[in-house]
Length: 395
Ligand SMILES: *Cc1c(COP(=O)(O)O)cnc(C)c1O
Image (cartoon, rainbow, N blue to C red; front, side, top):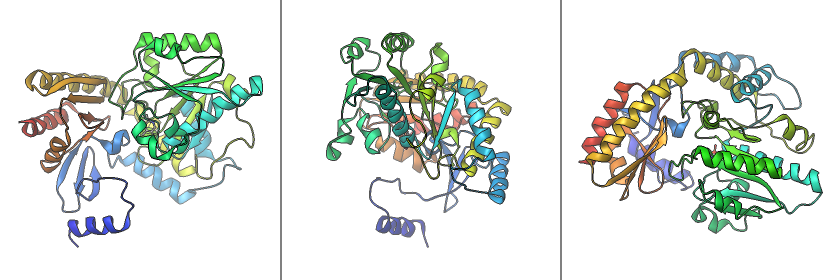
C-alpha cells in the first residue's frame, strides 16, 4: 500500500482529534526520522520534547529488550527492582524525596492536585480549597489537568471543570497576590511555559512566589513535564534559581519514548498528604517503564547531555536571533536551552508544512510560534542544517 492509502485508512479508523501532518513516520536513527517511502527528515520536535537521547540509542534499546525478557509488568502491590532503582535515581537528580510513577504527564498533574488538596484537607478538614494556576499554561487533557490549563478554548466544551481554580499571570506577582486567600492550597506553574508560548518564569517572580508559599503554607507545584529532564541545561529548570517546589511533575523525556511520568514531593508533603488507598494506578511505574527511566538517567550522565544542551542551546539561540533581525515578520525569539520559539506576526502553519516537504520536522506552539524542541544530543551541524532549510521556507 502507498503512504496516502495508509493515511486514508488512518482517517477512517482514528478519532479525528488531531489535524495530522500528511506523513507516516516509520523509523528513526539519531536525530533523523524516515517516512515509509524512505524520505529522511531532520527532527526538531523529538515527539514533542520526548526523545531526548535520539532514536536507536543502542544502550537504551538493549536495556528495554533485556527488561522485556525478564518481566514487563507487575502490580504496584508488589515491589520491583527497576521501580526501586528509578525512584532512587529520580530523587537524586531532582532533590525531591518521594516519587509516584504515572503513565503520562496529565496523570502526574492529577496526582499533584490530589496531593495538594489532601495536604490542605488534613490541616483544616474542609474541602473548598483553591488552586492558583497561570494563564496560557498547559497541563494536559484529563479533567483535572484541563481545569488548571489556562486556555479557555481547550476547556469550554467540557465545563464544568473541577472547580476552585483561579488564574493569574506568569511573571506578574501582583496578579498572584490578588488571587491568594485563606483557601489557597497550591500555586501551580510551568517553570517554562511550553504549549502556551515558550514563556520562561523569571527568577524574581519564582522567588516571590516561593516566599509567599512559605509564609502561608501554600504548596508550590512546578510542572516540569516539558521543560524538565535537561531541556533547559539543568535536569529540572527550577534548579537554576535556588528555589525548590513542594511538588513537581515530570514526564515527556523521562522515559524517552516509553509512556511514563511521575509526581514528586518533599518529605514534608509526603508525610502529610496521600496515604495508602488514596491514589493508585495499574501501569504507573511498571518494570518496563522504570527500566527506561533508569537507563535514560544513566545515559544523561554518561553522554554529558546537560553540557551539550548548554552549548548547542546557546548556539541555537544565536542562530534564531539572527533570523529575528533578518525577517520582518519574525517578532522575537523566546525560550531556554533547547526549548525555543520563534514568535511571528502571522500563522506559521505554512512554514512548518514547507519545512516538512524539505525534510525538517518542526512544530508550532499556538498559531504564530514555531517551536524547537529537538533531541538533547543535537549538534551545531544539525542546527546549521535546520536553519539553512528553515531560511528557504521563510523566503
Ligand atoms: C505535555 C505536557 C503535559 C501533558 O502531558 P501528557 O503526557 O500529554 O499527558 C502537561 N504539562 C506540560 C507542561 C506539558 O508540556
